[in-house]
Length: 260
Image 1 (cartoon, one colour):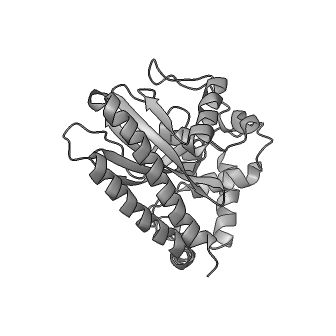
Image 2 (image 1 turned 120 degrees about the horizontal axis):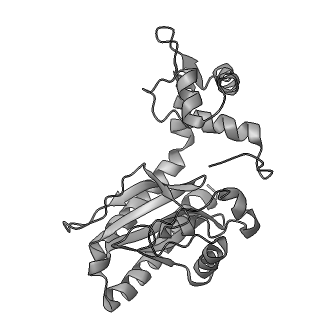
């Protein structure tokens, strides 16, 4: 995601979090030059960000390699996110049941800037199936999950989220923001969206948003090879996805919105 001339964001904070996001696990180490290349920032800027993160205790320097890695301060996150862990475990029960009902691949994703990240997946038993990977990132603008994740994003702020020319992934990909906005409005009105070979030829997806505190916090989808789609299972999939997304939304409310 590009940040230049983006008045909607605090640039220094955004750059700092971008550098911090480079550390995907507690076994990875990076030097300043490596980080500079990864985030496309001057080494002097990266060095100041690293100095700040080290001062706050989020990373430390390995004296043997002179590279930086995540610090033990992050251990406190284990207890801090116990409710999130509980919620995703409950959500997985619903995705497993949905998979049993339709025998197609079921996914849950969250938004990461201008991309989505898969956080859970239950695969179909069919040999012909999608190959999306948990933890991998995919575009928001041309996927059913992605559009659900930004369905409540302020329309006037979308140019800040997509300050670049949108790539046409297939002949069906919508790259005009006004066309994408129409899809976002459809999600608000009907509770779901269909990706009909917009991201990848041969793939058909039904997706619905998952809510928390009246905001979109995640999204659910069933992805199916286009050759297995017909009138009967299409309508059934829509109802199953909407219903399951609502069930997962209810789990969120019970865990986070119900006073203890």
